[in-house]
Length: 292
Ligand code: NAD
Image 1: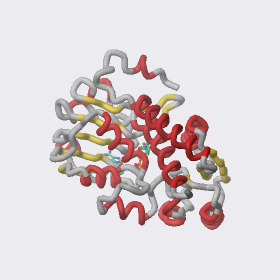
Image 2: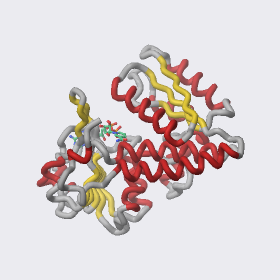
Image 3: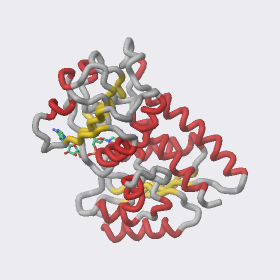
């Protein structure tokens, strides 16, 4: 793992420390899991990984380690790359029926021959710890975030709260419009009364939009897309993108340039990644609480 304290030395007051927030959330989850276990309920998360995509394998492993840290039982389903859509849907149906399983996480992206929307619809909304089921997404769009919502956007909202950043009335710009990050992040910012722009690969003159952002969230997977001259002075910047080159991860934001312009920056690594996993733990706990 890259040493964060070395990477961001001298910029500690500008960096949103995702590992610290994650460890606070995990501490809260661990305490509640322990109470639940004393009452005879052992929260359990089942993960499903299809294929051999190395970053996905790592993300699933990190999720299992987090389960161990907070006392959640984890169940590991690894399926070969050529698993059919029907086989995957049958496994999900089995897990939906299993009273000992609280959360089901299907690691994205899936191989091309499997329709991710069908998979998102197949997971029972009550066990949908990733918050991708249309009924959970629909509630989010209606402004109700009390249920299960997507983990990365939720993690960004938690970071905004914990750093005391006002959202109401501020201009937020989200770059990326995926179902996993961009769209739910946009919905959550709107729910908090931000003025919102959403940009994507077809947006003309991206920097015209990003320069207006008081809060800038970037989730594209394009390494170094956001340069220093694309950011407004004092903006709060969340870098969500992850690009692996050899054994290192890089974000969508050119940290060395943007850190001097931004007021605060959530970097890669050590920003929203660890918070996302901690939120997943809290969602598994939430799903388990409904078993009582
Ligand atoms: P995606 O890969 O499904 O889609 C990419 C998005 O970026 C699209 O909306 C596309 O229009 C936009 N885009 C691509 N090139 C662009 C460009 N040049 N200019 C402007 N927009 C552009 O999106 P995703 O699944 O949200 O993933 C995005 C990135 O975030 C990936 O690197 C992924 O690994 C990372 N990610 C990180 C976490 C985490 O926990 N840290 C979680 C989810 C995704």
